[in-house]
Length: 107
Image (cartoon, rainbow, N blue to C red):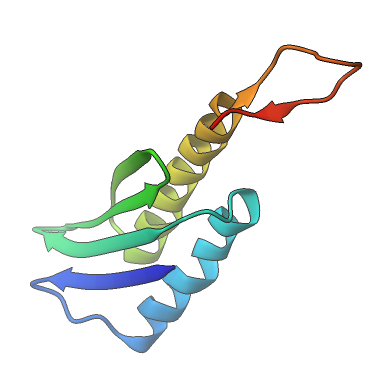
């Protein structure tokens, strides 16, 4: 999995990079088939903007979050992506019961 972090008119510090990597493990706990992830951090006047796109098999998920604090904006965008990943994961499973409560993955 590739995780790229870039800043638009903003320098990415080691603490920002570590914070993103630490929070990103939340997504990989729910769904470990993430192919690629791109984070773009920027500042627009007084608002800090965190934008993220993750590439999954057969889908791309995108989220944007703004806040006065960059760390809180990162947490918000990770939470948005987490909800999208859970929804995508539920869609990829067939919810019809075969024998008992066995679920099979649709490819």
